[in-house]
Image 1: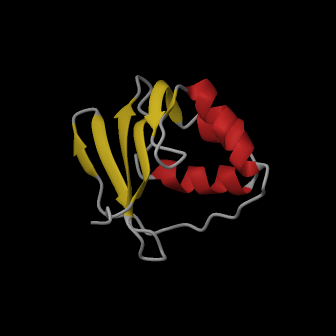
Image 2: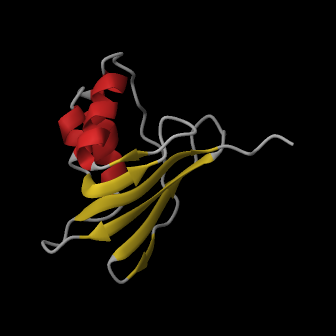
Length: 114
């Protein structure tokens, strides 16, 4: 029921190998900037992407989120990766039932090389 919950749920569901559960954290027409250099659009494509990623059984660790910014029904969540590389940011929208779903997800910000 809080935008910050999505990151925790993402880690829990990913570590459980639950690609469908991960996809349920996104709106139907959400966009994720992954794999690197590409965009995956829509909950179905996001589920297929995560099914492929989770087939290799990666383990995700919780990361301490930065303060969430909320304006009306939109929220910006972000976390600095534990390894200190780049950042992660997501935009979530409040749903009619008061829950939150991701609309935009930038899982990796990497400083461009000159």
